[in-house]
Amino acid sequence: MTRLGAGVPLVAPLGWEMVPPAAVGAPGLALLAIREGATTSGFTPTMSVALHDDVDAEAVARIGSETVRRLDAREQDVRIRRREAIGSGRTEGLAQELRLTTWIDGHPVEVVQLLVVLVLAAPESGRLVAWGVTASAAVQDLGEVLPDVEAFVAGLGSRPAPAAD
Image 1 (cartoon, rainbow, N blue to C red):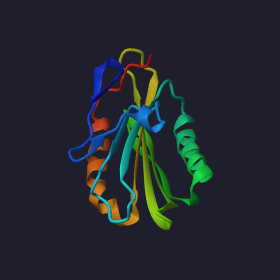
Image 2 (cartoon, rainbow, N blue to C red):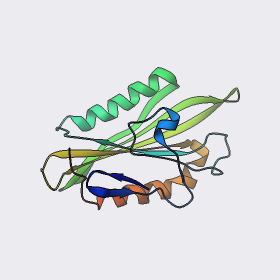
Image 3 (spheres, rainbow, N blue to C red):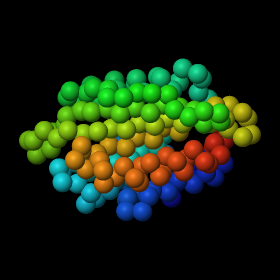
Image 4 (cartoon, rainbow, N blue to C red):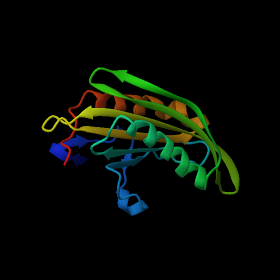
């Protein structure tokens, strides 16, 4: 379990293994989890959570665009399949679906990356913070992991926002 500001616990879904983000060169993540054995392609499904403090109205679009830019710099054929505003009231954000090609053992694998950004007001300060949940899986494995990702994101939307430091 990982805890964010104000002691908000993050727990990977059942069947997912927590990985220390710093161990894979991603120290800015609040959570990184993998799902071994849920693949037919050799691409291990991943789920990560990042917390963005003190966001403004344009931050959600920037987070989505930055994700595309980072992937485009290291993967092939990165394309946006869907990008839309989500939520209403106290939970608003962005849902983005990307497709890209990566190479595993000399073979191309088509990967889906889902990004959900949820913006919430921190209870103590009222400042806006954003949870960024990213999940990646080979196209043929997405159906196996999608229910876990959807349940995890739904759980975040029902939590109080962490305190913005």
